[in-house]
Image 1 (spheres, rainbow, N blue to C red):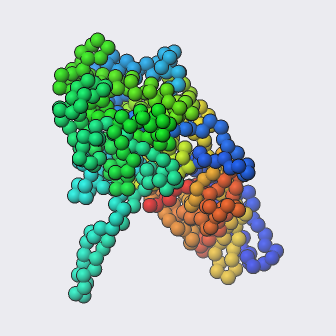
Image 2 (image 1 turned 90 degrees about the horizontal axis):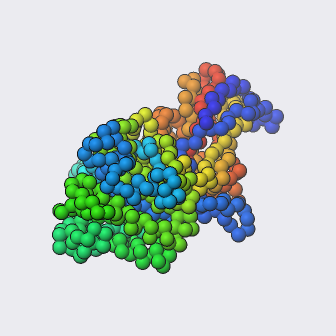
Image 3 (image 1 turned 180 degrees about the vertical axis):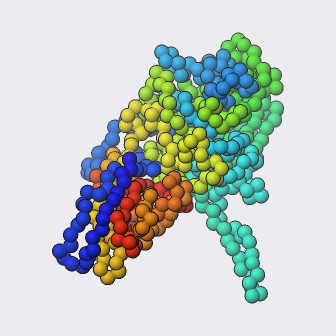
Amino acid sequence: MVKNISHMKKAKNINNTMKKLVNTSLLSAAAVAGVIFGTQLAKADGDYPRWPKQVGDVFVIALENHNFTQPNPTSSPQQIFGNPAAPYINSLITPGNPNAAQVSYATDYLNAGTGVHPSEPNYVWAEAGSDFGFHSDADPSVANGNKFYDNSTSLISGLNANGNQLLFWHFNHTPHLAKQLDSAGIPWKNYQEDVQLALTPTNSASGTNGPVNPYNGTTQYNYAVKHNPLAFFNDSALANVYPLAQLFTDLANNDVGRYNWITPDQYNDAHSSMNNGFTYNGVHYTGDQSAIAAADNFLSQVVPQIIASKAYQNNGVIVLWWDETEGGDTAGQAIAEIIISPLAKGNGYASTVSMNHSSDVKTWEEVFGLPTINNPIPLAETNVVGGYNNVATANDLSDLFVPGAIPTNSFSVTSDGFETDSRTGHVLETVHITNTGTTPVSGPLWLALDDLSSNATLLNADAVTSVLAPLGSPAVKVNSGGYGDYGDNVLRPYQSRKVTLEFLDPSAAPITYNARALNVEPAP
């Protein structure tokens, strides 16, 4: 919610002990773009409550290259919804089917951005909230330009100046989900089918002479780095990556991560058809339908094993995630997004809320209490079917869950009124941001002043919004030391933080603006 603020300032000396405050109830219910929810909330001393029904371990299973629904259901490739080659997937979303009891799904999950193709940019997006404008399926390398996090310095240019060689060093520490989890001490794991047959996790590998695949019965293998989102960031490329078989050992030992990414090989994720097709439930499929059947068969075996685990039964979440649309990036092409969880609304609940890959990133940040990723999205990709796809402004996945499973957060913004400094003539306003939600919010916070009246200039602005619409708004960083008595830069429920705004207004006209409280940097 945004409320327009209008105040007529009155001249006064701020050093006068008899200061008068003008219009004390000025700002209310400010808009929130991007919120953070914590899951490790309980403290033994009861400083703040443990909110019920928190999401447990998360398992994301990545699938490939098929629309959930599309304008022409008979076109190639065929859609997933109602497809006879995908009986298990369709059973999950059929109300009344026992498989659908703990399932919700999205009907309006759209491509991450306009032109975000082929596969690789979508996997990168699922990890970092942007594809950084890279549109290729190439294995990661400096030469290819698709190593988005380089944790070492590298010489990128030199310049002769007055006979001296000036060297320029590049530090590329792109924010991404695994890095955030590491920083918060939250364990994650990356399970990749056939990765053990590759030279390294950053090298693709395929062939026909591998071990017999336990799901499709062939000796074909195909590990594709383009389907491994962690491989494109140096700090996660070789970390916590395991062959798929390790998943089942970890499930049995209750040793999975809090966040787990699972990629089948290209024959079990519906990307590629096997040489001789695939026979499923007594029907022999060829071509693309055989790829769908093989993926459905894979899920019908793997998903029940996860559901049977202690990790899942402790409010775990399985996400069936598809990478990209086929045949266009319009509202007519929807991607499947299916969640299975004891905390799902269940019985094949169909959500009509618009979502995209940024919705997943946002949700996991909320679940794990992480800062909001705000990597720049190329301008041509930002606007998707009328909505913004920045992580901070995307809808999260909360509509798929029972209320409270993905907590909501909100801020209120109030003001003490305007004062004029008689020494400088500048207009000052003390503003209070209060966490009115149910979970702590990590700083820094930002206060953006949208539609600031043209007669006023915010002198102490720290940034101008460049990625969170509306653009061009001055914003002040709200972060000086710790919040409250904790000193940890976390704003807990019902706590407030204040900031003083300093305006130049030569005209002495009313100063008006719309307040927007943000927990993400508005101009990275």
